[in-house]
Image (cartoon, rainbow, N blue to C red; front, side, top):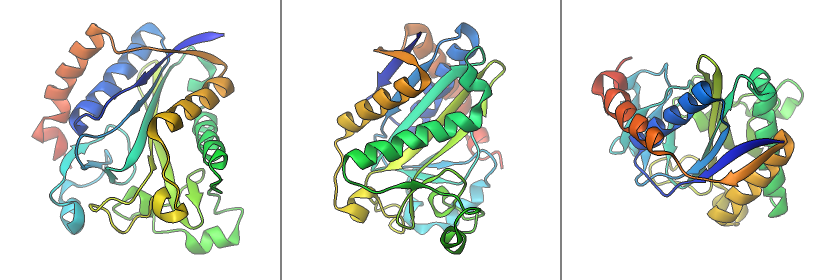
Length: 252
């Protein structure tokens, strides 16, 4: 069974979270290591999708005062606040790197499974299969990612609660995504699990449950770990060169 590393990080600023994800992707690319990481945000942060226009943030009043970062992955803007965020970096040598759609579905199936353990009924969105999904599908050009619907998103009733995005480096793939635990005052139009179901999930327990399910499905042996000194050094460099760089944030 393939060995892999599990990291559960404390809340950190958005530019650090994105820089560390990039550093872990480079580790997977260079050394062929798999890392599953869970993390939070030290302050409400708006992350723009790679292709979004910076000026469009002005149209969303509730998040105008939030810290901002531009992701390396695509999709709509996300207000990171009361949520569980994950990333998984997989080298090309692992078959799941080549099966990117299957990796997406696998992780989201595990989210559905973990929610079911807490008595929460969730499902994967499939507009092509269900007429009701077609009626409730939102404009995929909406500014906020969680007002969009794509195949495989996790929904509770009509509300999207989990979505993910991917980005490929030369020899590795990163998938990262968010599970909304509760409504943020910086995105009041989006319902979290607490408001939709009356259930408040324990963050640490939810991370562990997801890690167990993902490791079983991927057939990997997850071991608790930390970032290395070389990864921290790389993340500091990436943070300064990219995610703290106004030219990157406003590049569109």
